[in-house]
Length: 150
Image 1 (cartoon, rainbow, N blue to C red):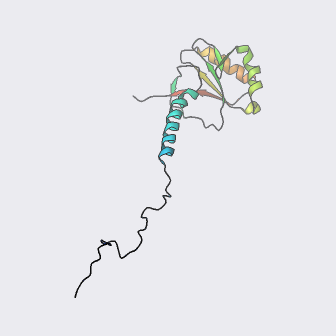
Image 2: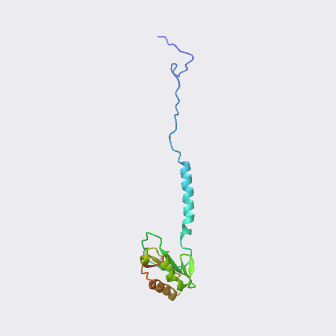
């Protein structure tokens, strides 16, 4: 009933080689990916409001629902002084019909959005509508802001 104790082993097993516990790390480090995604999110949050039509208008408030749109429509704006814009570019009322015909890609089925400032005269907006209709375009939408329930 005797026990023998070896001095060199000290509890490591009887002469076995020590194996590496930590092998190759095959995990994907997602920290750089998350950092890049957060930066892109912030960039797009800042840039998104700048992509809207650049003519500042006070649109009338209504309860109308938004029209579905698959592509970017032609936007015509009438500001409070009666100046007419196609997208961001000012244009004379007499040049409106020829310019619309020149830039419409889908012919007369092209959707046109008309934005009129709330303080602009009713007659100025109606004159623009008449020019659009006289040019042969019948797919016209009036843009308004939603009524806030504050």
